[in-house]
Length: 245
Image (cartoon, rainbow, N blue to C red):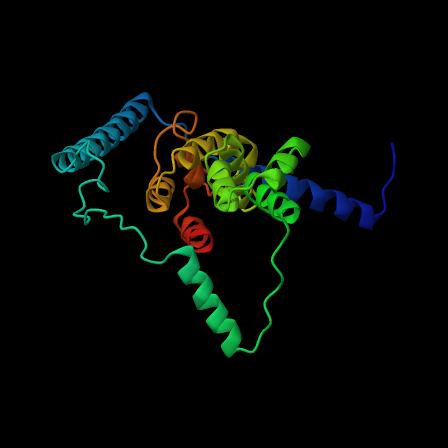
């Protein structure tokens, strides 16, 4: 038989006693298993809570439905009728005002651009692309006194103008996206919608209103992409509206 010293015997007894006490406390801490009747009672209480919650939701829905309308709330606002008046200022009058302002400021105006410079600059600014060589030759050889104004009108009506500025406004929105999943923001649809609006010469107040109040599926309504880009979060939307408009 192995022999233990007195210290070893007391240490062995202490460990054994601690294990017995710990096991007893663990068993005492375990709750008694609920009876079948208690489980049924708890389940019925939970079911009643869900029923009460559903009833409250139904009441709220009925109250909201009383004031619900399928009409666009923006269209019901009493907005003044739009009136378009032709400007009383002619190009010559505007030039005269500029010349007077420059003279008062003692500023020498820049020289008039050549035809080659003009068609390059205005085509690049409006369509994002350089004019074709034949377009430059035709423009330079034209003897029309209003050929510069006519060129601007043609560019405004061109598909390139709508595409270029729709692309610009897409980038304005794209690089400030705050949505949780930017890849799901339907930017191509947004650009397609903007291209259509610019091509139709839709007034900017109508374009901005559709963007700010856009709703529905972004696959169908490109204007709704503006809100989707901000995750439909009020604070982010307020900041973006202030920045863009």
